[in-house]
Amino acid sequence: MRPGKRGLVRYLAMSFALAASAIGFQAPTAANASAAVECCGLVIRYDSIQNLVVAANINASNVGKGSNCNIWNWGGGNVWNPVNPGGNCDTRSMNGHTYSYNIWADTDAFTVQYEGYWLSFHGSWRYVNANVYTKISSIETAKCYRESDGVNCYVVY
Image (tube, rainbow, N blue to C red; front, side, top):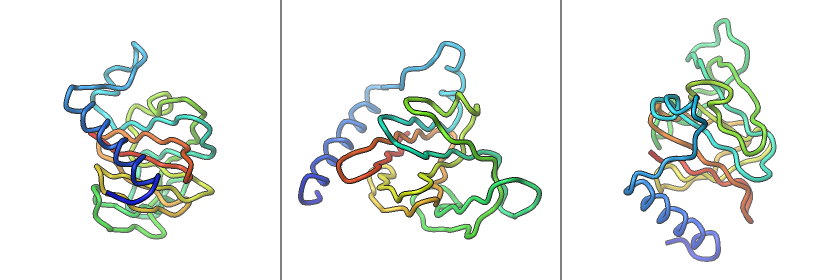
């Protein structure tokens, strides 16, 4: 366990996440979006996080799309496999207290645009720089909160 408040908070958060996943906890959903939650990558924005951006329709090459997605884990998972400066993707900013299925049925990646964020990827912590995307699979959910040490995002199944 990490020393200090951050370590305790992360330990407790991961303990809750593991316990919740063991009993089949699922984020609250709108009635018309339950299929999207069951099938597709989901990002949830909590609290007062500003500039949380989600991406979809990612291409590994810079051909024909809008935004440039700098992804640190292109192959998915917690493996450092960057696409830098990245492929092209479609991006949208998220409003507070919202779910990404309000924007897309399937979210492929997320970032915090103007500040770095702490990321717990299934319990393994790392710091991710501002405007660097974390790719998630169709069965993963990312939950991002503003905590005492900045933005913390938790990727869980």
